[in-house]
Length: 383
Image (tube, rainbow, N blue to C red; front, side, top):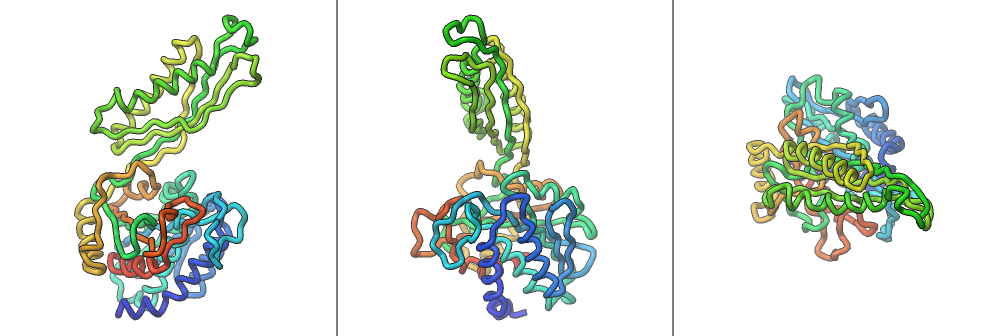
């Protein structure tokens, strides 16, 4: 295969795929039209695929053999109103591919289109996981539970994310923990309401909640070593019914972050203990429920070193950047890391003419489409 010529052949189609998906984004759990479009392209190119039940994504494959390598791509968009002014801007009010999943989708589908004519020359299966709900409930785990890693077993999985803060033509990586484990929580503080003129007759849930918020902030700084990164964030707080009524109940929600699963387990226990004991000190009670949980995204060392070496041979060593530190952001690609050797990296997508408004989840995000060519080169080389 002359990789450069083959990419030249399919790149216009891949760009068209990306623009179509960008114009018609769908939110997490609602990716039905995107799935239908994907299946139509797969059917037209005679690429084998399976639609998982319960809107849990699509698994598409080329190649043959008893070994399989996986590539993850996401389907969902964000509740963001686009302000790019592009001719192919979102046509869906209030919904936009502001996290680059349209680029990931197009590159992964392009990989299948690229490899399909050479299917009989492959000695293993290349399997792409087109995953829903990355932005919300972690659709990767549902795909795994539906058997996407089996028959044949997938022992290695690759994934990438665009990076609008890095120039097009660069790749960023980190061996080991690259993204944090995350646990979201919902907290209810219960007191006893009464007239605001007679606070001694009640138990003020707002005062207790305020004490909890303050106490939680001391956990990363006083319960864990400064060399052990942890985050406790209270993102929402709601309570009270009137200005002259002592609140009987307050609801809060937030997130915990850590770079080690044992640390996360300890953090969860410490947060629960702090909430319950602080509330008790005010005569109130606190009930915490942990909801969405992602593990640590962990890049296996040997696989990542070999992968980055191959990428460097393609784009040059000077265009490879090692991250200074892990990100405390989360990505549900981490679920694949629990079941296989994994390598995840960032591909720069900022052109020379773009400014500081190019950040993820921004209404102005407009990835340089030249990054699609680089993504195709990299994916083909490493699988």
